Image (cartoon, rainbow, N blue to C red; front, side):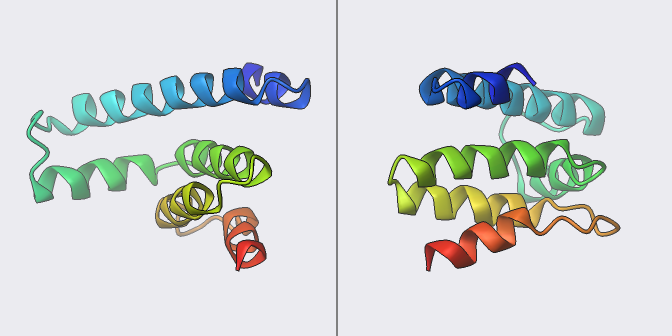
Length: 106
């Protein structure tokens, strides 16, 4: 919520920093939960992604980061984050924001 408040109040860079820190924390939690190694083998990546798809937090964070980048005119960066968000949408969640965002950039 704090990151979104910063963005809403015009501090996009501060918001991106908080979102990045939160996402890194999620990745760390995923590695801890899955027992992954720091070398990030393919099997570890799949376990981490499965863990991150356990709820909507990861895909929401990535989508919000994509929105900030899109608003700043960084289309390539925004596309990257929208695509990453789409990959982490839980299968039972109807979350179209990153799909719509990606289409709007094209």
